Length: 398
Image (cartoon, rainbow, N blue to C red; front, side):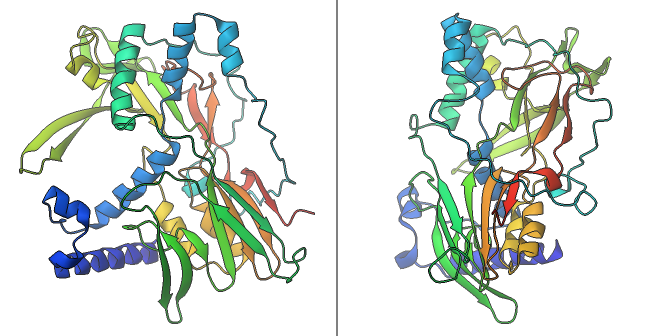
């Protein structure tokens, strides 16, 4: 951890050294057009940018969209045709599973707890909790403006594959990775070769503003990513105290929402303050529905329960990947990758190849996660996580 933090500090120092020396000739066009000069980069900016990438690859409001479509169709048979458990064009490849030792890796990725479910999952399901249609429509309209301000984006996909040196003509492994992220300006990727004599020699592509190589290779090992697309976000409709909108029901008691004060700084120096309510499940996301004059009689109560809400360890995991040489290094580095879920392929010069579905996957009790739900106590909801040792992986398949 200390080494990862020192790398973050070095990244910040490097960015700020450029900002301090930035002349008009090398000022990026975006800043010229906006009439801005970048403020000093901070360690917090690094982690916020990492969290933004995490959100872009795992954040969504599919629970709300599914409820909206089902209500608009008013035809469960047609809905199931559109949202089947398996799609006709999906042909899953199930490689030989290679579990690691639970004794060595008893926790979930990122060190999250993974207690065994002694009595099994709750069999009876809690009732779905539909958001009123008018409120749902207004909420989705506003979320669409935030999520896709320039309109719906193109559907993107990624691919990766790896061939063992035992099966290649050269005797060396071949690893290919083609992540299909949206084209944008400035570019999301920046190619780099980073060398610290005696400590680091890594080459690949980086996310500007984040330290180290995201996809690439060292002298002895290579790795690549594609997005899993797993459902790691649920919508929870909290039951608000009718006599006190600052409280919600949980475990048979009225519990106070936590209030977090935030602010947005505008270019002219104006500060726009706002507050975010948090429940045990996550931040409430529907405050602007009442703010914009819709459903003013109802208190905000829609919480976003997402694996990225808390501390995640992308930067630590990448710092370890940048020093990988062996398959053991790969397992230790990927252990810290908790969000967003990624398919991480690996190859080394000792003829080892591997793929792993990396990330923290909550175990749900009492509901499926398909639609918004009301979780009134701790026997339902995310009751555990899949241990890292049992995440899907295949090492040197036959």
